[in-house]
Image (tube, rainbow, N blue to C red; front, side, top):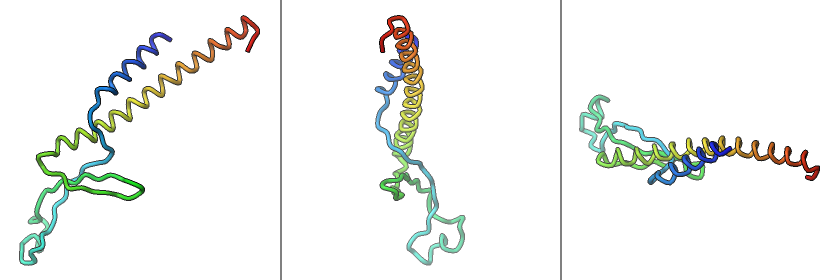
Length: 117
């Protein structure tokens, strides 16, 4: 059980190192402009962009925000950090389950020895 507790503490410490995070995804799109005489209205290959959008769900509704190209890698890291946190929480749950099962088994062994509950 000591090994499991060490694993738990290691993952917990990894979580403390995670910086800003946010759920969502990035997608790029090409758009037409407001100038009707622009060639972007005549052929898709002339659309303006790429523009990067960050999309997430809030209160059951999709929210999107235009991401400046200079911040693209930073926003991508927020999304990666969110996914990393989720994966680490899953690992903590798995380790916790093993620890809890071991504690219950220890308790039952003690109960058999002493005859108390």
